[in-house]
Image 1 (tube, rainbow over the protein chains, first blue to last red):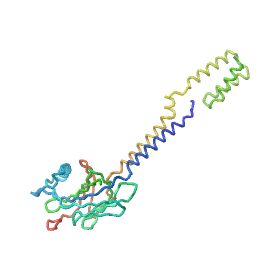
Image 2: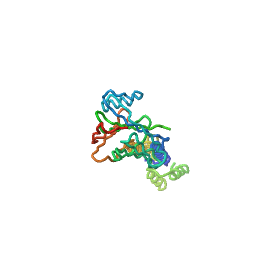
Image 3: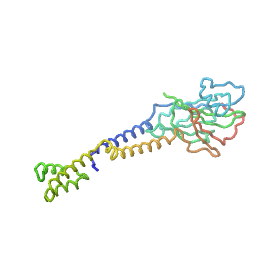
Image 4: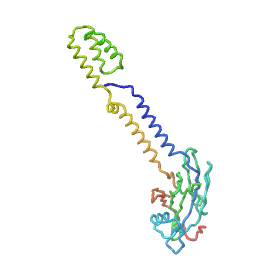
Length: 155
Length: 130
C-alpha cells in the first residue's frame, strides 16, 4: 500500500476540530449582556381575587397547567442587578429573599440562594435567559399557594 | 532492453522514489538486471508487470479517504459528539442543596424552568404577606 505524505489532511481535520470546539465553548461560556434579575411573588388561589397575570398569558397558562389555580395575585416584586461579583439580594416580600452572585467572569452562570425568613430553601446556580422564567413552587398559604417567578431582563 | 541506459535510468528513478510496498519488486528487477541471468523477454515481462503494479497503486481519492481521512474524520466526529454531550448535559438550572426537610426537583414546562419544592410548612392566613 502506498503511503503518501498527506499530513495536511490530518492538520486540516485537527484544525477544524479545534475551531469547532473553541466556537462551541465560546458560545457556551462567553459572558452575556448584563441582566437584571426580577423576582416576583404570586399568591395563587381559586377565590374571587383579581387576576394580575392577564398581561402575561403565556406565564398564566403555564401556572394554571402546573398548579391548577385560576387567579394569581402579585404580592411583591424586587429587582437586582448582579453586575459585580458580590452577592445582591432581592426581597419580593418580607417572607422570601433571593440572593444572586456572579462567581466566574468567564461564565454567565449565577449562584443563587432562596431563603424563607432567612432560612435556606434552595441553593444552586442558573443562567438567566430572557423569556425563560424560573418558576419556584412555594408553600401553601391560606387556601392557595405561593409561587416565585424569576425573570431575566436584558438591560 | 536488458541493461540498457534507459532501463537503468528508470530503475534509478524508481529507487529514488519514496519508499513503498513495491520496493521488493524494484530491488528484484535491479538484481535481475545486474546478474543478467534472465532473458530479455523475462525482463520485459517484469518491467510490464512493474508498470501495471504502479498503475494499480496510483492513489485515488477513495484510497486517500479510506486510509487517512476516514479515521481522522471519525476521530474528529467522536470528539465533537463527546464535547456536545458534555456541554449540553449541564442544565441552565442546577439545584445543589435544599433546606432541611425540603425536597426539590427541576423540569421544564412550556419554555420555563420549574423548581418543584415539597416539604414546606403551611402558612396560615394570619401571617401577613405584605
